[in-house]
Amino acid sequence: MAKAQVKDLLEAGVHFGHMTRKWNPNMAPYIFMEKNGIHIIDLHKTAVKLDEACSALEKITSAGKKVLFVATKKQAKEVVAKHASELNMPYITERWPGGMLTNFVTIRKAVKKMNAIDKMKKDGTFETLSKKERLQVDRQRANLEKNLGSIADMVRLPSAVFVVDIMREHIAVTEAKKLGIPVFGIVDTNSDPRKVDFVIPGNDDASKSIDMLLSVVSESIKEGQSQRKADKEKSKEEGEKVAADTDKDFDAE
Image (cartoon, rainbow, N blue to C red; front, side, top):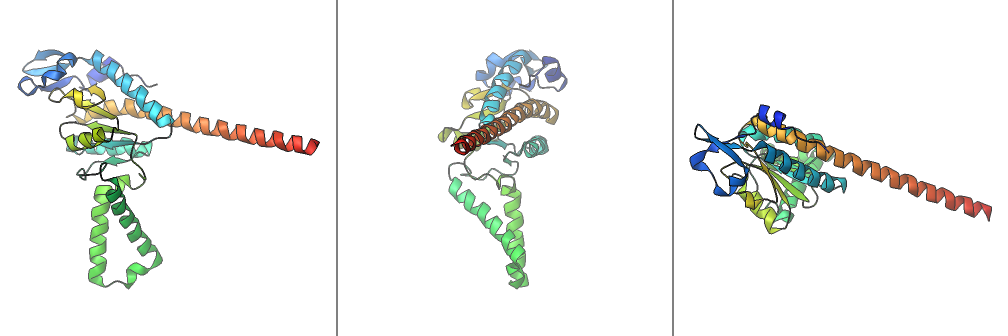
């Protein structure tokens, strides 16, 4: 499993919290000190909590399950999109569609609508529409792609949700909790860590810090995926061996 080094976390600025007046008292156990009016996060605790989160994520993905990444703030969008697409995991970096989890059926309908438009373009139906209708359909397709393109392959609810900035993404956190989906979150000193299942105390405002934490998380997910692949191949080989042995017994008779 990928492990975070305190030195690397320090270099990436993961330890910078918010101004002391903006703090959430529930983050006290993860705060090391106060410096120039800013809270400094205890990176030894971050490393421990990050290891816990990575271990759980590796377990989830080794079972072939999906993790939904959520980050709509400017500094996190590109970083999250890059890591999630490399892992082939669904992600939301535009506005969170209300009911994305609690009303998943409706969201799936919207994704199907998007796929139906693509099918129309392939089979030539699209060309039979008037210019005005084509324009409307194109606009609708672009809008759907922007908001839901990154979750087009998500056919069922995710097994976990990974959030950058739990205050900003509070709707996503609430929906996941309502459905009993475990929430992993990068939690800054201004947030309430009790709202997530796996707390990663750290700076959620700087893209360098977010990138550093997500790199470690990604490594663990990749390990989980490799394990899944190896297990599948092993069971396939075992299945073939059993089939071959059965054939041998049959021939012997």
